[in-house]
Length: 487
Image (cartoon, rainbow, N blue to C red; front, side, top):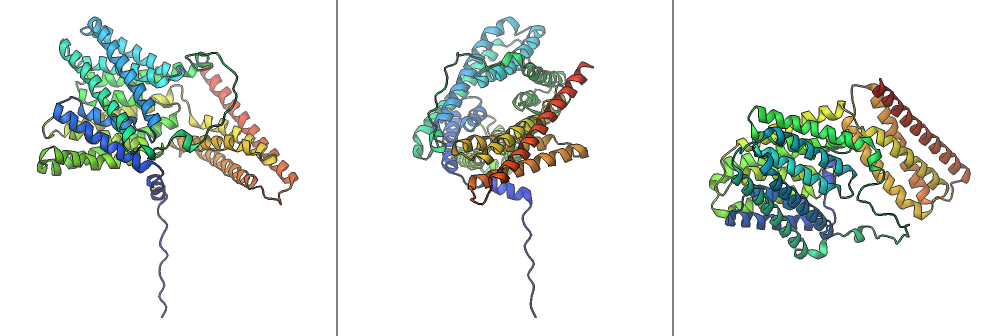
């Protein structure tokens, strides 16, 4: 009698996606090793020298670490400059507003508004963001220590020390630990010397001040963050100040991008927090000395760093997982016992997510779907040109446009309203057009001899017609929004 064997079911799509995102890639293992070594050194120094804010120091190692030394150096330099400017300006401002909340709260809002606005229009946007954000956050912390100016100044200076020394140590580790395994921009994509016309230097992006969306973005973030600040100040619960941070960190260029970062933030926090709680209950009571602490932190840091050094689809979850774990583990210079810190962090993140989601959804929404239509129209035009004339120099630009469109497609899924049949059908149509464009691009890139010029021209005309339709839809949607705002 023949026996039949069941065919194994294929893994769930999300499992296949997760396996793909966690699979080894060039340079990922070496970068993870560098992060583990640098973090171990930072924890060792902070514990033995009793440097405050050890969790922040350990977190910044992974926060600025990239797969190549040049990117890590740039990120570290910008962060040091931003922290230095913010702390220095805060110390100069404190004598005038430290005991005057009627001035301190408006100053917080104005600093955050300016930082968020400049982050969109300034050439070095991250520097403006870091400066405005840290100054606003520092002024918010003043409310928890009223009248104690000396303690406030000492705290600001120790924050600077904790941040700067960990960043410097991270850069040094990247320079001497497995330096030959780092991927450089040149190794990934050799640049071509292209003669560009000389342009007048400006500190601001072209046309930045003519676009009202930048100011609207800054207003939305400021409203959400200050609302969270007033909430946790009114209920006297400073432990959930992470709500303020969440509103600032998760605010991106569109609703879809912001929602994805929110999901990654809360996911990473829950995983890292769960590991931290398990560690406090079952591991910490049996730890003996700093060696046990370093071994434990190295294991968790390695896992978090591997995730954080992946693609943008999962990297932020690894960063948050790392920080949530260290918030639990590095509470001081004695074995940690307080479980409330991770509870407060989760509550704060959830409050921030709810607040920023509501504000971004109903106040001047910037939907990824609108940007996706524009990007797809450009993609179809480029594919139409490539089909009729598949020249090698066009391939790089077309590949970059495919990457941008795919990234916008993934972000648009987070803002898709599944209860709206028309919206779901429209998203499916856009997905079909992207697949068709990929098929025609691959066929043209293969340069199949049997393809006739007439077929190429027909494909080109069809793609151009689809691009024109998408452009008209984009204009129509913009007209509708403008009409609604005018009414």
